[in-house]
Image 1 (tube, rainbow, N blue to C red):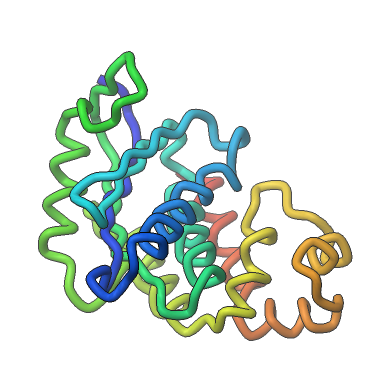
Image 2: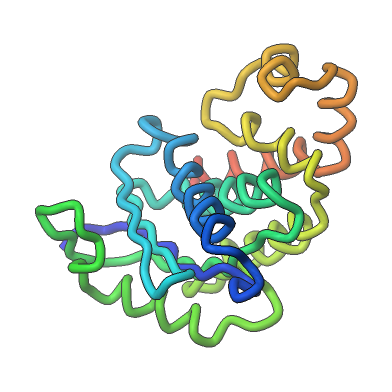
Amino acid sequence: MSHISVLTGDLVASSRLSSHALDAALGAVKQACGDLSPAIGATRFARNRGDGWQIALDAPRFQARLALLIRADLRALGPELSTRIAIARGAGSLPDTADLNAAHGPVFTASGQLLDTLEGPRIAYAGGGALGAALRLFDHISQGWTQAQARAMVPMLRLDPPTQTAASAEIGITRQSLAQALHGAGYEAILAALQMIEERA
């Protein structure tokens, strides 16, 4: 078995979404992996249970960043889009194929069980502790992001983020608007916290 991180989630209020909107939302979850690749190493994504999804991450120290990027990608797509995210870290066996649904191990069980009990906060960590506390705060802060703030956060949450000038051009807004959105989203504090988590993980 490998030591990995598993993020398991499902879309909130998915019954209100059209099939097209559902596909787009799950595509945004998958896109978050692409936003961090290849810097975070191998990731595997699977869609399950209609509105559910799961990601296996070979570099567990980036699990908090990935969770926030999922939140940002979804909110940027539509202010009504959200997902629960249950995170666990531990031993798991990945299949030789790309089919993550064939994976197994304690980490997959822990992530799935956490999702089944997740109420209130929408991002949580099965291991609790300092990381669990940080994720609780990240969840609270990011639930308040506007769509504009989420759009601003997406490029800046990459491991090698662009300059603010380049990011504003990518998004199609002025640099001043980007700076205001990042400030409102709490970017500097979030980035500092993520860097401390990733250095010590």
